[in-house]
Length: 368
Image (cartoon, rainbow, N blue to C red; front, side, top):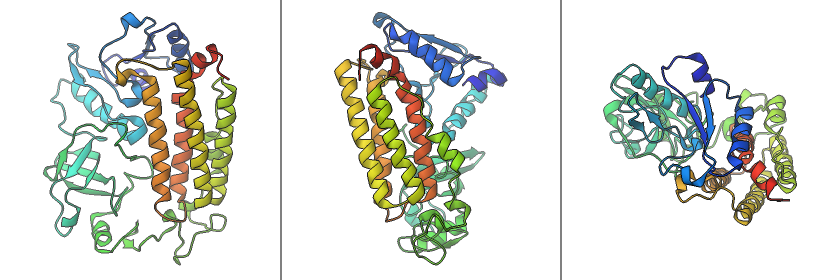
């Protein structure tokens, strides 16, 4: 948002409003400004419960977009934590139309769609739900959210997909960098569909569960992360250090548990084993449960409107991360490097974007 405001590409104002509704709002507003370097957009806060809005949602759930007459164009764009960079493309597609007085696009990147007419030879894919990763003219790139082609993308005519209602935080599946958006060609996808229980597409050649990105080497044996030379298997040490360089949330027990989670995640980078991923799941589950208990004890993020409840949004994000890990555990004995990268990145973003919200509040309540 700050980058959009600085670049001046869109003739509009960007507002970031803290809606805690009490005196701690000012502190969070300042912390958000410092963390996100908000120097070009309007950054404000609501410090009284009587002034709180009755409509809206938190920024992590998407942007609210108004036109020049302040009429609502979008009640909520795609949430970043679910669709990653596609969320920004969704906003840009709408702003491009609003600021140029053009008709709104009927489909934007990041929106959920259903394949209502599958390409010839791929009839079994009809009915699958996915994400629009690109919409240009009469062509749509369809990213699969589930099934044997999960994370893969095919190009289809616009008439072949139907836009669905926006996803809620509990049902939305992750479609992030490293999953949807790095797809096979249609021909490779067709080959995948014809292979029973196909796990991945590798250069148009499908083998159930094969490929280093699926945790296996070319011979089909388990991939040893320390010996595999393929780029897909490598995780840059500098990325790991940056992702696990966590800020303090001013609550000693939470900082300590964050470090415990970071230790488990470092072990996952080294081993990429199911056993260590199970350890990560236990560590995250225990930490999230303790964190939510502190929210209940001290009354953090309570709001009559669930869409404005920081506690509810935070807990939903906990569930999403845990479900992501459980889903990976259900796929087999090994853990692919792209998944590990995503998990580290999302854990870092969770502590930076979500946990910072409770830091001053819980610290002021004497939480230990």
